[in-house]
Length: 76
Picture 1: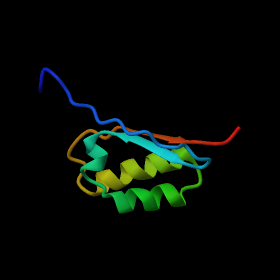
Picture 2: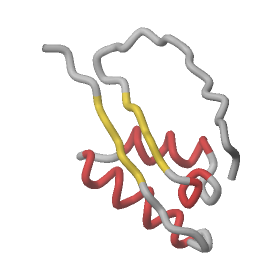
Picture 3: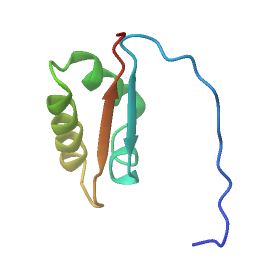
Picture 4: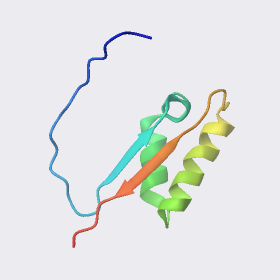
């Protein structure tokens, strides 16, 4: 633990269909980026994406808590 944290901020253009994933290291430490992309690209619903990401992390060892939030951007 540190008294201060250095936060990296980068602007990105949000496009229709983009996905954003916020997760703990229980997911990112157990599932590599390519696996995450494959799961997100192939799932039929956001609920299924989250369930599959958590299941994949658990099958890879699941030695930490796994917190995952997935957002999909849709043009209005």
